[in-house]
Length: 256
Length: 277
Image (cartoon, rainbow over all chains, first blue to last red):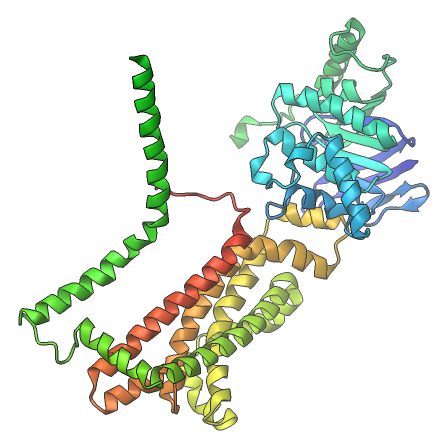
């Protein structure tokens, strides 16, 4: 269980990115965090990985406070971030370098097969398409069998077709070990398709606005009437969340 | 009728396929046009008495001199002596430059401590060290190797330490996510990421090594191509001087080529600009 209690994050430049955040994520749950830009959702994810530390408050995984990156927590970035000088298989082996060679080989082979990249094992990252590269990044994050998988807008740079393909694929991958998954996205449809629960955040300072658990049957069908109804509801919610009070416009004329 | 046309098309496409491969394999010959052309032009100019080949001997005389020197075994001794100094000096210079460059690129504290001093030392012309090196390390091999190592050290140190500071933060973060130790961060992310500029620095360091070996051999040596050069000057034999210069050029080019082709494989991953043929 992942517990976030009273977390605030203020950057050295004084910007308060998160304030008084409370959130609990159950084991094996798929949680989506949505919000416009500047609502602190990526900051929250960085705190969860241990790359950054909260200014106040605590984040605990199974009772242990997270202060630095841990092997139980995997992260998929917005970009694939593969090491361009390593073949795909070596990129994937990155996260399990401590294992004996035999075990490493079999795990990497298994991970490659799961993401459908087995034929590309000895290719260079530059030889992959955007979707393939992101699959490789997924395999790299999952090969160490993390308890918690964090995803930072993982498919936002892909075209719509590849994106929905990878969303389905992600659920298949999740089904193997059922890690807790926390996905940050600005795509409502993606959040609805993947998640059990959706948290909407709002900016200035970054905080939780609302939380919903749409009672949709798995697998979620993007064209189902109820799915669409939820999508519109959340779109409206997100619109309210990122609407700025009058007199405090995002782009004040004076600044332009 | 159509069959004949097809055959002809097939035949011509076969030819077209063979030709580029052959052309590609021989494309390095283009690089010979300039030196060989200039040599022939000079040879011709002297043969036609347009010029006097006394102070600038013709290529044929240089070749004859080189032949005589190698027949007597002299050339081999000189080349070996020089090569040994360059290899040793280059090796020490690269080792020190890599070690300190990586440290100062990775740790701000170490950079603050050593970088200003090294930058100040860098601006001293290395030749200025010669008298001190002779006093400290004697007139023989040690002082020569150290002088070469000093020349090789700076481009390696400078390039590596600044290239590390230019490595993509995003890749470093991947290392942090996978809990890399400092050593792993340096060897598995920072050094590979800086490899393209590092290899370039190795090549320019090697070039400087060849430059400094001449300076080192000028300060008194019993063998070496630099010694041959001085000897040719003192005995008034321009053909010997030029033979030594040609030997430098060939060896420098050869070692650079060896280094470049040995490291080419390490850069296969690069997704870089490939100019049109």
